[in-house]
Length: 336
Image 1 (cartoon, one colour):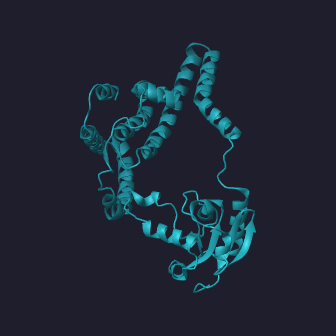
Image 2 (cartoon, rainbow, N blue to C red):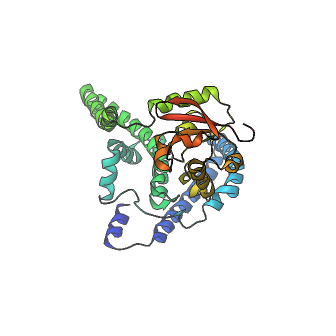
Image 3 (cartoon, one colour):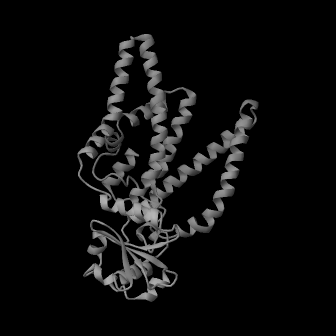
């Protein structure tokens, strides 16, 4: 990886090169796994284990393959999906320094575990770098940063392998050096492994941003207690929509960015939301989407051309208000 990083800095490397390297690595890994599995089948002690895992794999494939062929593979056919992209998270740092800086002692311990740990821990550490190898060379979705989801899996196993190796080292220090040395090593490792989390929690504690206001939370509690689970509520299309997140009620349209890259277009629904907020006399549109309630907060007022909340009173009635947040019930809509 460090060599690839140097090559990338010195000259332009085509994305397909990274994809081919990853593909070769995947094929080699599969061949090795199949060889080891066949070899283990000849051993009575490991045969049952291999067969049990094979049964589990068969069940997973039965459940997963229909979904993959019906949805995933079709959605991932665009140019912006599965493509070669090396070192996508790093901008200016040297490769190994970037990850040591971001992962710290956990990465160092995991690398040490890969080379120096006992046999069973080695097989825990090895998949870390197999997943890492693929995720560092191939991006599996349009938004590059979403590849982090694969690295999180590697990080989980990295913590396990690193902690196991650290225990082995402390045992050796305790046996051949002194107990104080092993205790000191554990304290240093604990500090280095947790200081970033402690600083993050400290930053969150002194931060002054707000996800949902007190009024929004109170209104959502009212909605949950006084509306039906099947009711449709007209709200803004923001991604952190409190009605959808806190009440579970249906909304006309949420953020279109969630599934836009998977081929689902929401432009018609987004246009309908704007039309209903700005022209609430369009009863046919309210009927089309079966809207029963209208949720008005400062977000709706800022994002749409709402001159006054009074424009909703012709076809709706105010049923509840929490500060600047208002809930209207549609009156002239069929079914209401």
